Amino acid sequence: MFKIIKAKGVVRIPPEYFGEELDKIALEILKSEYQDKIFKDLGLVLGVLSAKASEEGQIIFGDGATYHEVEFELLAYVPALQEVVEGTVAEVDNYGIYVNLGPMDGLVHISQIADDTFKLDSTRGVLIGEKSKKVLQKGDLVRARIVTVSAVSSSGKLPRIGLTMKQPTLGKLNK
Image 1 (cartoon, rainbow, N blue to C red):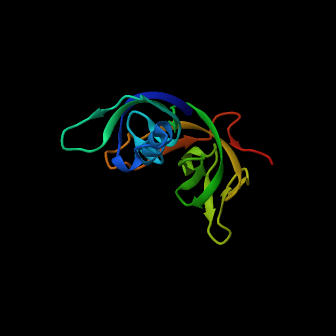
Image 2: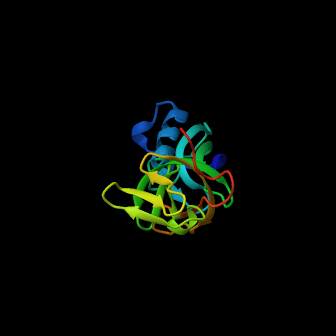
Image 3: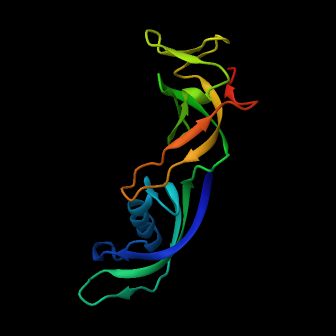
């Protein structure tokens, strides 16, 4: 799920930026701190949309920079349990299919594709249903439901997203 998050904080403005537009500099500094990073409380931050810094800052002894309170908006992606998502198949292997959800990928384990047994045809790079003869391959558009999301680690790795396509209305979409 994509979210717009309103936040408050303090931004450090180095002396080399004095005299420039404060909000613009604050936005650039916040982008370097937040954008394209994952946070336990925020999810994957895709962008910093705006920043409004206080004109009045504080100076800390021994540091030539000024510190300003700032209000800003972030665009973040947070995968939510039970959320129905659509994406394209990015990879097919004997473990299942990897679905690109936009900012990150999710895995549909081979047992969660459908009520059928799927086998990998490695020469064609596709999964084929034994009974249904349904074919899944790279580039297919699919609809799935998020069933598991691993916790965000302190190392900043993306969470693992587990998907299912077994319920009605889920699965491969006709183009």
